[in-house]
Length: 307
Image (cartoon, rainbow, N blue to C red; front, side, top):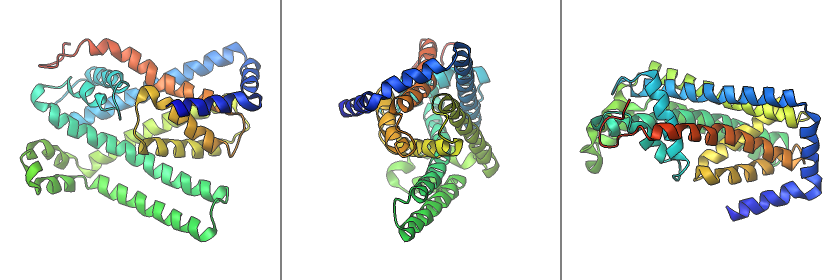
């Protein structure tokens, strides 16, 4: 983390980057900034609202919950996630809103939802990395084609595995040390391909909203970068971030380091890049975590959460 902060400091302070960013902010009128902020916050609520709808669908085979209860559990999970490595706390924040006897099964259901989101991130990321290599001629043609082929195979395998998630139940039941917990894995066999597709479409909706936020802020501060280039860089950033261990409170440092590396191919305004990445991180992670702190107090770990 110290290295990340040092790297960002060097990038944003050298070559008048900070001064250039201040000029960019001053060039935008106050009402434009306020309107942008409004849209970003609206998209954030829509994003996590879709996640609540997805969570409700995922847990429906185990326990029926209201949409409001799903929203409570999602925001509570976000609050606990920022204090734990790899967002482990998010699982506890959600499942403690379920009946005690259904909480472990709820964790399995949440893993299915996370797998769908990772599928979306990895497939788009693999394609974006291939396009990035071709666009900037980073490797020779044959090696680039080999990477593209591996990206396609990787994506198809991930899609095939997701839509056959019930196979994982059978695999786990064949191991002696996991077979004893078979009742918790049975939920994997309850998701039909049609239901898995609905869940994946909700993930696509979240992915689109998240990408739209980045398009808005980059259009405001770095309009010279084309929308397709922004999307390509963001898909790579999502892919890299999903592959690295994370700790939400420190995650913004690694996000910015990664973004500065890839965006360095299309712009030298490093301060503006850092501002765009940090603002989206703050709106999508820190603000919901603050709001979710209210729901943390409603948790009843040893029984049902208080309504």
